[in-house]
Structure formats: structure tokens, C-alpha cells
Length: 200
Image 1: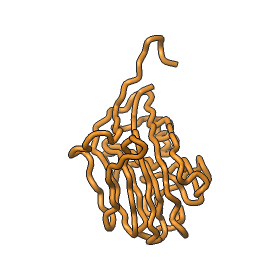
Image 2: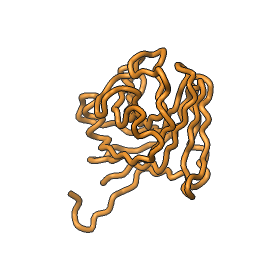
Image 3: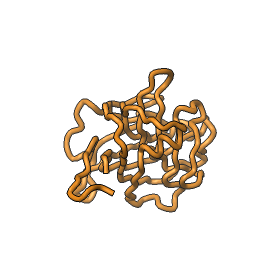
Image 4: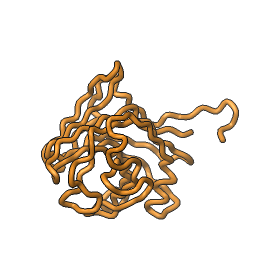
């Protein structure tokens, strides 16, 4: 519990209300997913439309680990891609992911992916089919809540320690979103809003 009068410190915030600036970049893994800022019910958000495409939209950051770090975001999906899986590389498509990249001295960076899964159970975890350094936590799954805006919140430090079995948490060097359908070739759309990392 925070001390009386203590305030949280915002380490990162993106509400998509202003021009995104140069810190946000496409990260290409295939053809480019269409990322654009749109307005829905007077609120700005990031719309991601994939049609046989696979690219992330990410920002470089330099966030030193705190004793506690909370990540919070809003998201909504049109639907999960038909025939998509959570464990087979050929059909490893997800309508929505929010990811956080951690600095590592050796090898590819370790990454937490908070995913709207296709079939996996909520709160389950799994590796990317091609890398155990990119790990996933299932936040939502399937189509039962598609079309609804949802607010999510996670403890970043606890999640990192749980996924990578270590007490220390390295610096955060990037974060972003990922919407893809290059395996299934099924058109899907996700919307992301108000991504925040703070010390509660």
C-alpha cells in the first residue's frame, strides 16, 4: 500500500490523442499491417487492420525497473482469425497483442506478450513457436468478448519474474502492439487505447 499522500509515477503513457511522433515505428515481419489513429465516440485510439500482413507498431523507450510497475491498456477486437492457433508457427496469428521488450546483454531481447489468444485458456502462458525468449500471457481468448472495449492491468515485475524465472528485472527498451494474419490470410482489426506504465 502506498504511503498517505504518495502519488504514482507515470513511466510511459500513450493516449493517441496527439500526433504519435517519431518514437513510434513499424517493425516488419511480413507485409505491413495498417496502423492508424482514429476517433471512436470522441476518443482517439490506434486501429490496426491486418489482411495477410504481419508487422508490429512499437516505441523505443528507456525505462529503469522500479520495485513495482503496472501496465494498463484498453483494447477491442473484431474477431479472432479463423483457423488460427496459439502453438503452430504456420497459423500463429493474433488479432491483438501488447508487448514489452526488456534489455538483455546476450541473445535476442526477452519479451512479454499480453495476448488476446485464439483458443488458449485465460492466464495460461506459452512460448512463441520460434523463440522461448518471447513469452505470452493469455489475457483474453476467443470471440465471446469481441466488439467490446476492455480494460486490462498487469504487474510487469511479477509477470517478468514468473515467465523468465529470475528475480532481477532489466531495463525496458521497447513496447508496442502487434496485429497479424499472415498465416491464416483472414482480415482482422484491433483497436488499442491508453497504454500506460506506472509505479503504483
